[in-house]
Length: 140
Picture 1 (tube, rainbow, N blue to C red):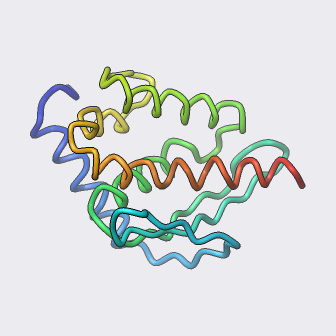
Picture 2: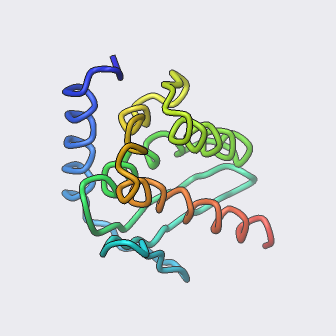
C-alpha cells in the first residue's frame, strides 16, 4: 500500500487539508522553526500520569509539515510516553532507512522523503518539537 506513490500523495494531501481546516490555539513556551524554510509550529501537549491526553500542533508552512503534524496527532493521542517514544524512534528510523514499518500506519507515507533532503526537515520538525517537550514534561 505505502509503496504506491499515489497512495502516499493522497494520504499526505488529505492529512494536510484536515490539519489546515482545524481551528486550534496552542499554548506553548516553544516556537519551533525549520532552519531551511518558513515552516514553524507550536505544540500544545498535555500529559497526565505518563499518558498523552491532548496533543495539538499549531503548524504553518508546507504540506509536509501539516501532514506529519496531523498524522502524529492522530497516532500519539492516548499513548503513554514510552509508546510515544517508541513511535517517534520508529518514525525516525523509517525516514533514515526508507523502509516501511507497518506499526507506523500513515506515517509510512513519508517513506521516501529522504530523497529530497530539504523536505526531510519539514517532516522532522514535529518530531523535534515532541522530543523537546516530552523531555521538558518529564522534568516537571
